[in-house]
Image (cartoon, rainbow, N blue to C red; front, side, top):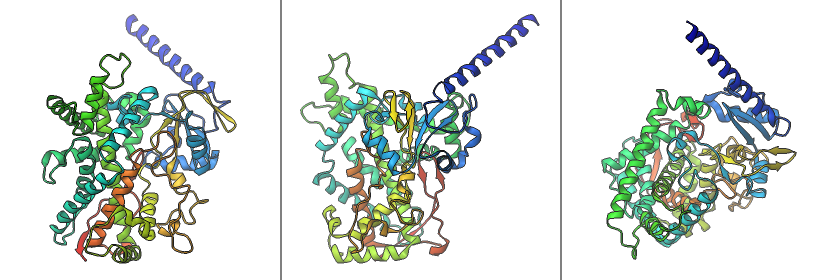
Length: 494
């Protein structure tokens, strides 16, 4: 009895100390941080947030506390930036201070600060520089990769023709095509569309990506120190991520056995060669773990964001047949029906270019961006943000900033057209983020979206089993990612 009583007293004392430390840490910077709702120990601002609608919850807090405010996700202290002015001021005007990488708890279960996307400091700089240079060497943003996309578009068109107009879920048609483009760069080859391992990889990517957008995914963001040990859908997300890492590791082992240092075949070979060159450097960032996880970063990001954007785009075009008709007219006039679309065609196709931009704006793939972190104590506006504080640049609030888009909640390509019908740029178009940690795959993504969409629309018109007015284009989930609703469609030859 005495022992159990002492244990209970010790436990209560420990919990009391933890509560006091938590309150002290939160109060320490209250006078300097941007305003925000008062957090509770351990749970932070959980009671003020709806995990089903986390993005909307944060936007509503912004309406109350201003475009720069502080929120606590569990014990995580986050500074949230809303609107074009605040996001640009941080990520561009103070780019170095806001260049650190924050948490993405689901992915951090695997990456733990390794790989090009989720690393910090010198590691992030070296891996980013190497990745950009190596991808360029393999045709990234050049004529070579355009031909590769055109070739893959041919395979995709054939797959759509084989459906013979039947109503079909386009999800894995699109992810297979898009994934094969990045696969040809990082692995040196494409997958056959019927390859069972390939389909399994795509399901793993889709599953873990979708989890980050769900209510449970947002709950995990707040309470991952405990939830990572508990049963729940997060365990399936971990299993999916582990499966992807295992696949990449096997690819790396295969390349190691057959490596010719004088003739790199793909991104993996180039990294292995750099590893050999830096064997005697004790501070090198070129080692096996960074190779596997950087390759996974490229494979994952190069698959999910573009294919999900295309999937959302098809749904929006079926909802707005007038937009689809105008794009068909422009394709027929500029490209015709007897040759493949070229990336240079987009200069003569302002409406199609505006339509693609509007799909990206409306689809808003990463509405809260990938979290940033300030690299030192940072004065921002009238606030002092302590070193290490995480930052959410709310890209969705920029893409829907009413100062830059007349009807931000409506899908309307006119947002990117001037009075003469010519394409116009918009400073609030930031789907790839901005600043030092922006998406360096932006050039490839733009090329893929244009070439895949125009090739498909050159050959098909879209039909939904529902009438346009009954099509629901609101997202299924909005969290770290935006996930469109599942649907079927028919590809009818033109």
